[in-house]
Length: 293
Length: 285
Image (cartoon, rainbow over all chains, first blue to last red; front, side, top):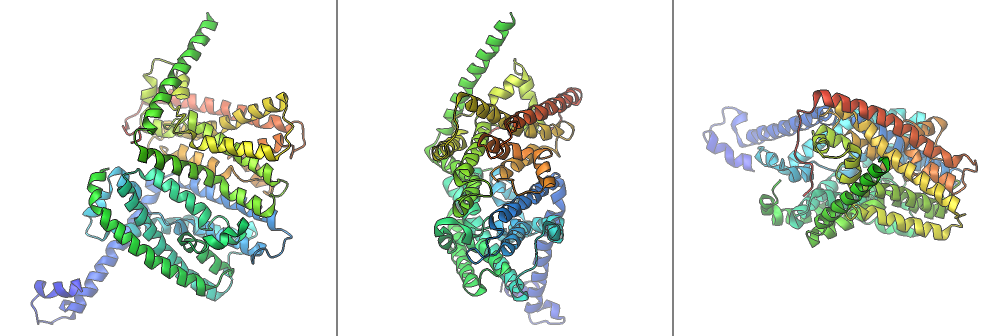
C-alpha cells in the first residue's frame, strides 16, 4: 500500500513504459529490497558468530554433553516401563534429541534485551528497517549458523547415541514446520513483552531474563515432556503460552500430540500475545530514551 | 613473627569482608523495586536449575539407584555449592576471564595486599549472593529430614571436606579456563562464564546411566561429576567403597595445583605484556 502511494510521486503518473514503474512493480521492488535487507542482516549475523563468540564450540560441547546426560537419565528411568503417560522410551529420546537440536529456536531469544542495556539498540533504530524484522533477521542468522554447526551434526550423529531422529510420520514433519513457525511467532511476541517490562519497570535485563529463563525451563516442556511431570501439573502447563513455544512442536514431531488441538492453540497465543506486545511496546516506547544504555 | 603475619592477614580478610558486606547491603537495598525484582528472579533462577531433576524424581519415585530424598540431598548440595560461589566470589571474581580480558586485573594488582587476599575478599556478596545459598540450605535441611543420615562428627567432617573440595573444583575449573585470557584477552574474555555455565547446567543430574567414556569425561575433562553427584554418592552410601569419600578432595587438590601452575604462568606473561584493553564496566548498575 505504501509502495503504491509512493510510486506516482516519484515517477510520472500514467506512464507505464515498463511494468517496473507501475504500482505493482514498485511493490515488487520494495519487497525484493526489503527481503535483501533482511537477508543481508541475517547473513552478517551468521558470519559474525565466530568473531563475536569464538568459544562457541565450548557451548556446543556443553549441549552435546547435556543431551547425552539427559538421554542416559531417560534410559535409567524408562527402560522396561513400557508406555508412560502416552510416551514410550523411544519417543522420549527423540523428543529430547530434537529439543536440543532446535533449542535456540524453541527458546527464541533476540539481542534486543542486552542491546537495550548497553545502548546499542540505538543502532537498530537508525537502520532503514522495521525493528521486529531486524531483530528477527539477526536472530535467524544466528540460528542458521548454530543449526549448521551443531544441530545437523547432532541429528546425523544420533545413531551413535542410539536415538531415532526421524519424525513420527511425514504428516508430523509437515505439521512440525507449521508449529515451529508459530512457536517462533509466540517467542518473538514474548520477547517484546519482556522488553517492554524491562523498560516499564526500569530494571536491568539480567533479572527479567533470569526470571523468564527459569519459567521457560519448567513450563515450556523443552527439558522434560509435560506429560511426565508429577501431580498432573503438565496438563495445566500445556495450556500456557510457554508450552506452545516448545512442547507443542515437539509433541507433534514425536507423534505424542495431535496437530489439531495444538496448532489452533498456538494460533490463539500468537494473536493474543502480539496484541499485548504491541500495546505494551507502544505504551513504553517513549521511555526508551529515559532508560539510556 | 610468622604467627603475627598470619593473624594480621586473617584480620585484614575479616575487615575486608565486613567492608564488602556493607557495600553489598547498600547496593541491594538501594531501591525496593530493584531489590524485589533481583531477589525473586534470582531465587527462581536458582531453584529452576534443580527443579527438573526434582520433578522427575518425584514422578518416578527416584532416579536409578537414587531415592527421591537422596536426589533432594544432591540438589541441595549442588545449590549450596553454587550459592557459596555466589557469596564469596561475586563481582566477576569467579568469572576471572572477564577481569583479565578487560584489563581489570590491574585493579587487583595495585591493592596493597597479596592477590589471593584481594580475590578472596573483593567478591564477597553475602546479601545479593545469598539468593541461591538460602534455598540450597533449605533443600539440604528438607532432604536431611527425610533421610536417616548417619550423622556423626566424622561424617560431618567428611561432608565439610567434600563440600569445600566441590567448591574448589568449580572455582579452579573457571580459573583454569579463565587463564587463557592472559594470552587471548579479547577472544577469551567470556570463557570463564562458558566454563561456569557448563558446571552449573550439568551439576543437578545423576550420572549413573552414562557410559564409561562419557562418565570419564565428566570426571576429568569437565569435572561436573565432582560438584554434587560423586560426593553425594559417597556421603549417602550409594557408593559403598570406603575410599569414595576421599576421591573428590583428591580431585580438588589435583585440579587446584594444575590451575595454580597455569595461572602463575599467565601472570608472568601478563607481567611482560600487560593489557592494552582496559574496559571500565566492571560494575553493575
